[in-house]
Length: 115
Image (cartoon, rainbow, N blue to C red; front, side, top):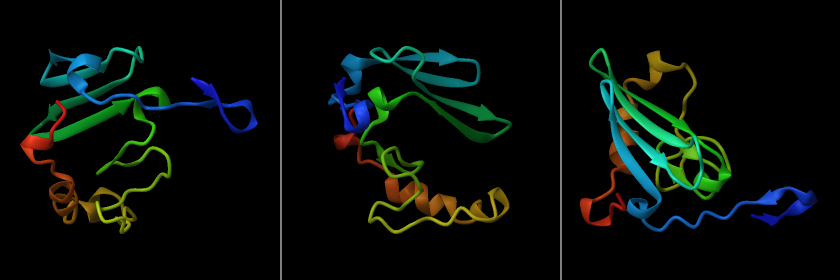
C-alpha cells in the first residue's frame, strides 16, 4: 500500500489469477470466493428461493480497478461493458426486465476466465 493523494492509501490491485489469491468454498445454498490477501473480502453466490443472490464484501486492496456488471469500484455506477450507464432507477420492479441484458453483456468467455 502506497500513500496517495492527501496521505490516503493508494491501493493497487495485483491480482492476475484468482486461483493463487483466493479459495472457493461451498456454503449453505451456494458458493463463496474468499480473497486470501484481504481478510473478510468475499463474493458469495447463493440461491434465494430460486433467485440468484450475489453479495460482495471487500476493500480497495482486492477490488481497486474492478469493473463489472455490479459497477466500477473506482468510479461508481453500473454500466454496460461499452461504458454506457445502466439505469437502476425504479429498483427491482423496473430493472428485473433489463438486468438479463446487463448480465449477458458482462459474460466472460470461459477461455478468458481467471477462476
